[in-house]
Each structure stands twice: as structure tokens, then as C-alpha cells.
Length: 303
Image 1 (spheres, rainbow, N blue to C red):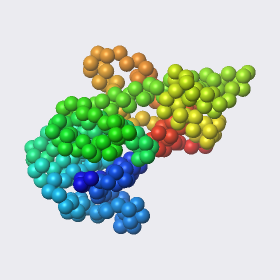
Image 2: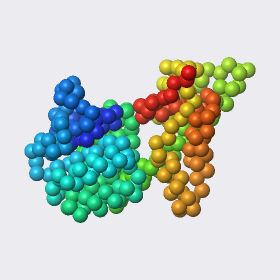
Image 3: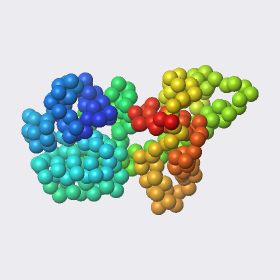
Image 4: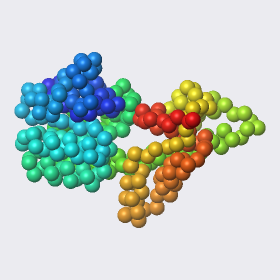
């Protein structure tokens, strides 16, 4: 496959994306501000020490850049720097969890210099390198078509990608996806706590979640991950019942307010995370474990 792409940000997700693309025959260059030459060599990445050097690695005239850094200032700064060094016809893809309204601003910023921008909501977590990702893409359709082989290579079974619509739509759909995820995880955690509190039955939570994986209505990847977490640590010992949130749930609820859409389950799940930070509950240990399982998010350890 005669395609070149540079990946900026080689953390848990960015490195997985880089590795999967390489395995699919796409030529990948990499840059991470925290990496040095030894790290690039250890990970078999043709890396650069700065953005200018990264751009110079391309052999083709059109440069495609995948940005996979934390949303907010890190993404803003990276794209502002790219805006100053890329040329007409180059393409920037933001694969992180940026707010869709900010993505529209970036689209307009880059478009003023004839640089194309796609917002790609990227789901799959740390498992995506092997299992494939789910990609929800917004931006100009003709630019999406140019990058389609990249999305196909990254996607699960070559089918887990799609064009959502104009700029911002990819990150909007991913935002709602994450809001739904909040509600699903909260429901699962509450059910497991009820089982855990029914002491007279001495229920085996690992056995039950293993059983539910086969044929039950609630079988899902999240349930698989919960079962994995309980196998590793049946009582979730050493895990603080403290659950972080990374922003998408808040944005989803604000959008629901703006659109006059009741979002009881998602709102309650976010408020429960707030409550967890001053609480002691097995369900919050379940939530913290699930976030660690699918996304590699840090877990607070109990004292």
C-alpha cells in the first residue's frame, strides 16, 4: 500500500494506531515530544525530533498527519504549529477526543490555508491495535475518500469506520458514544454492587459475569472486560472507589440541555462519578476497573 502518514502523539492510543498501520503496509512516521532516538528504535518507528523534521520525512507531496494528543491545549498547540508548516493539499486528522465545536474551529483555521481537516472519533482503547478501531469521521467527503484506506486499515474487520457528515460530526458522534458508555458502565456497576451486597448467597461475581457472557441479553465487550477485571482481582482489593471523568459525559449532557433532550441515565452516571470522589462503594471500584480495562486509564489505589 503506497500511503504515507505521520502520527503525532505516541501514547497508549497513538502507538497502537502507528503499529496497526505499519502492520497493514502503510508507511508511518512518528513524533512524540517525550520520546528520544532510543525509544523510536525500540518501537521500530521512523521518528523525528520536531515537527519540521517530521514533515521532511515524507516522500510524497501530500502529507497526511494523524494527531493523537490529549484534547484541549495540547491539540490546539499541535494543530496551530501544523498550520504554520503544512502546504496546500495537506491533510490533518484529529483522532483524539476533542470537543466537536473546537474541531469546527480547527477546520476553518486550516481551510484558510488550503489545508484539509478531518475529525475522527476513535473508539477501541488499548485493544484497538489488535482488534481494530471504530472510527467516526467528519469533514469534507472528498478528503474522507482520500483517507479511506487509512480508516479501513485501522478499523475492526475493515468495516468499523464511516463518514458521519460535515466538519465536527465525527467528534460529535464520538461524544454521544462516550455518553452512552457512561450510562452502560454505571448500570453494570450498580447491578454488580447489588449482587455483592446479597451476603446470604455468597455470590461469585466472577462466575456470574462469566456466565452472562454466554447467551445473556446483557452480554457485551464491557461485560467481558468486567469479567477480566474480576478474574484478576475478585474483590477489587487496593482499588479506590474514585472514578474520573474525561469530559465527554459533561459535553453530552450540555448538548442534551441545549437540544431539550432528557438524558436521565447519562446525567445520573456523571453525577455518580462526582459522588464517588467522596464515597466508599464497590460499584465505584467496578467503574474504575472498567475504565482501566478498556482505556488503560489510571486507577486510584486505596490507602
